[in-house]
Length: 87
Image (cartoon, rainbow, N blue to C red; front, side, top):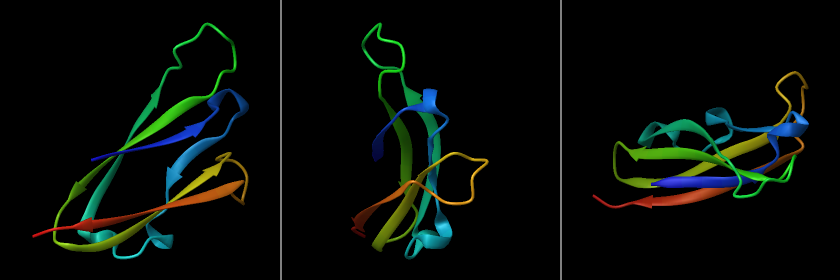
């Protein structure tokens, strides 16, 4: 499955997956596939950051993603996604 989160890389902010803040992250593999360029010519327009989630085992998972500037210590915000994986 794919998770998309709205952001603006032109401001230095990116979305990062945080396995330590996630619940049961061992049940999935999460890979950042970068961002999808906006369908506009506007400079600085918001875009979508994309993550691919591959299930490894059945169960319930809550994934945490932080919106931050990599050189700063604290995230501007956090988003979570709960996923139910069927056997």
